Structures are given as C-alpha cells and as structure tokens.
Amino acid sequence: MKLFESYRLKGLKLKNRIVMPPMCMYHATQDGFPTLFHLCHYATRALGGAGLIIVESTAVLPEGRISDHDLGIWNESQAHELKRLADACHEYGAKAALQISHAGRKSRLLSGKLYAPSAICYGKNYRIPYEMTQEDISHVVSAFGEAARRASEAGFDALEIHAAHGYLLHEFLSPKTNHRSDRYGGSLENRTRFLREVLEAVRKDWPVECPVLLRVSARDCYGCTDTSSEVLEIVNQVKSLIDLVHVSSGGLVLSEKKDDDAFQISLSARLREKCGLPTVAVGMFTDENAAEDILASGKADLVVIGRELLHNPNWPVDVAVRHNIPGYVPDGYGRAFVPLPLS
Ligand SMILES: Cc1cc2nc3c(=O)[nH]c(=O)nc-3n(C[C@H](O)[C@H](O)[C@H](O)COP(=O)(O)O)c2cc1C
Image (cartoon, rainbow, N blue to C red; front, side):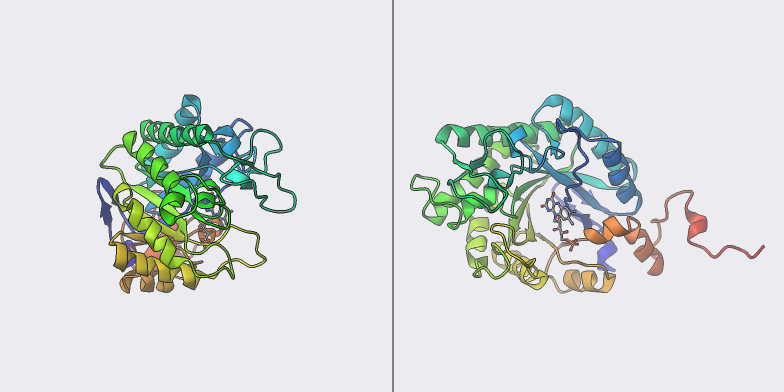
C-alpha cells in the first residue's frame, strides 16, 4: 500500500505517508509552555503509527497567539520544553515538525497589539486590528527567523509556516484583507512580499537539509471566488524557499460553512503538476481507501489524518494490521491484536 511506503524529502525520512496535521489543543500554560497533556497527546499519536506529526500552531510572538492557551516559541525556555515533544515523537518512531504562526487579526487575546496588514475587523467579538508599520513588519519577520532557530535547536525535523486559515500571513496575501498602498499591498508580488521575507528569515536560521513546509488555503473561504490560480502563482514566487506545500482552505473571512475538501485536493494535484513541489492533501480521510486513492492517483505525496487521529490515535496501527503491514504494533500491545485463546 502506498500509504505505508516510506517517503524521503531532503534529510527527512518518514516511515509512511500518514501526517498528523497541526491541531490547536488550547492546553498550553498562559505563558505558552506545553503541558503534560501535550506530551501524552503527541507521544500517543507517535505510538499509534503516524509518520509525521506536525505539532499545533505555535506562536512566534505573545500577541500572535489565537488564545492565551496556545503554545509559544518566542523564548528559549519554551523551546527547551517543546524539545520534549519532538523527543517523544522520535522515541516512538515518528518524525516531528512544528507549525509556527502569527494569528494577526484573528487573535482573541483581550490585550496587546492586534496586528493586521489593514485595520479591518474579522467580525463580531473580535477587536479592530491595527495596520502594521514597516517596523512592526520587520519585528514579526525576525520573530519568525528566531522561532526557526529555536525549533531547530529543539530537534524538530521540519518546520511548517502557517500561511492559511486567515491568520497574519494569509491576511497579507489576500486583497480582501490587505488594502495597503505601500510595497506590501496592491500587486500579487507586493502582497507576497511579507511571506517572502518571513521565509527568507526562516531559511537563514533553519538547516538546509530539513524541509520547510508552507500551509496555504486553496481559497479564502467557503463560497469565495476561486483563487487557486493566484495561490499557484504565490507558491511559484516562493518556490525556491520551500520544500513542500500543505494544501488546506478557508478561514480568511467568517463563513457559515466549512470549505469543501474536493477543492483543496484538486489544488494539491495542480500544485504538484504545475509547481513541481510535493504536497500534503487534507480531506477528512477516515477511510484508508480514500487516502490511498489520493496517493496512488498522484494528487499528493502525503495525506493528513486529522480529526480521525483525535478520535482514534491508533488509526495507522489498525489499518496496518488490517492490511498485514508488519512492524506497527507497539511492543507490549501484541495481545490486543491477536485473538485471545479461550480460557
Ligand atoms: C481541533 C482542531 C484544531 C486545529 N488547529 C489547527 C492548527 O493549529 N493549525 C492549522 O493549520 N490547522 C488546524 N486545524 C485544521 C487541521 O490541521 C486540518 O486541516 C483539519 O482538521 C482537516 O483535516 P481532517 O479532515 O483530517 O480533520 C485544526 C483542526 C481541528 C479539528
């Protein structure tokens, strides 16, 4: 099965194609440190057989958190604690990536500066953001660079830059949220400038042999116009700075419905074909045949198993056992997977 074939990207070697995507757990301490919950949560998914675990959205600055229970990596002590999560994933056979982010206008913190490319409010119950100055932009760019260095020192094998779901980087990319008239707004090249500067800063402090993943939204929201050609162009512009594209969608503006998965899977296939970069497909996979089909038909290189892994951390082990793939049942768990003799 393709799902259980190993995968290599630069120095990263995965035992299978199953990716646990970043999923905020809101269990961090109020100063952004991981807790015992995180250690158990990620170690369990590693034991359960996921090939790559992308640790949830981790803020590069305190004001870049969505909530005051998000993880942070704006200081060395936080990185020191995050290392325990990377170590736990390694101990149980998974590789670990860290998603680094800035929430921009979608931060729900009640105090601190709310940054955005333009002063446009996300919606009811959100504060009105403040239009970033050049100084703010440079400050956030270097925070991403510092975060990359700390993530590398913490032993993460890959780094994911969160440019999707309407958070700060995505806000710069879209003309809906970026009304600037300086060199960060207007043309697509200008709107991509902030992302490019972030990626350049990250690259300076991140080992060449370790992949940089970019998470994008295939379109801005459910019902929004098709911006996939623009996303393709954005990816092309930063292609030399990234190694893989993680194709999600939505989140830029409030919408009642979640975006449909077929849309993001088709963009994954297009990005692979047109930009020549490997991709991760996202799409509420709960059934291995659907995931296998995406891989076998060349629509993606890796697949996300998100909510299903929250529900069943052993999903990869279960599938491996069903398909006679050896090596997945953790030591000590064997008797759970063979019929017990009748006593
Ligand atoms: C509880 C939860 C938290 C999430 N947090 C993040 C996050 O921190 N960063 C991110 O990029 N996506 C986040 N997502 C989106 C997931 O990464 C993933 O794209 C989504 O769950 C779709 O995959 P699935 O259909 O396999 O669940 C979150 C999703 C869930 C359910």
